[in-house]
Length: 336
Image (cartoon, rainbow, N blue to C red; front, side):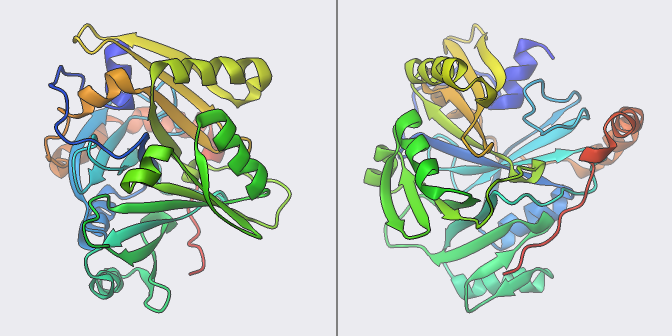
């Protein structure tokens, strides 16, 4: 894939843009989830979570830094949220042609999302055929992804409240995020730690909670996705260099430095993992933020085109399945 294709596949439709008028509270940018049925997932995120399509792109080649997971197949990416990506956290929904489902991982537990009417959202999920527990405000949506719904506080613009993970040791995990990325601890209990970037704490951004799993190790699956953070270039380089020296096993892909000559400067992309193997995408904010401020066009997928693309990609998909059959699985829905 060319540098231009890579930059588009990772984060944006590369285009020069004016500085954003509104800005996301902090560095937490988006979370990557997988889908085996894009139409079903987008119907769910719209009807239940109140999210709309921000942009959609089709990629004829697998992402060289595994944005679409460990699948050597054509794929698509759909960003969904309540506002353009420079204004609020979002979900990146990745679809891999030919992949019928994803083995559920043990790391990503659930996402907490604010909605205007919790009861109505829970009912909408049940009406679509998804498991919904009104007492817990808990929903299991497409491909087994779990969500907790909360009433939107007055004045709150950020729709996402928190992302929850199960890990062997919440204390050491939280310490890693604090020491490595500059987060701060904002809550703790006997079996859980919650961290967030200081700017997100101050202005109502997204937090990350790590709960003790009861297992001595964590097996990360493609289902567990990837967390994306927009950080100053100097910090992206420092984190990458530090991990390269101290813990090279945490480097998932070599640091990418891409200059698209759009006037946005060099975009740095570091794909690393935390001490549990959960993947992180670190992008340099100086180029990333102005680019995504002009990326949203609110146009969703063309399903008629996608039907033809699935036929066109059949040979590529068959070859990928033959080469790596073990990565093609099916998700198991979690208990509510």
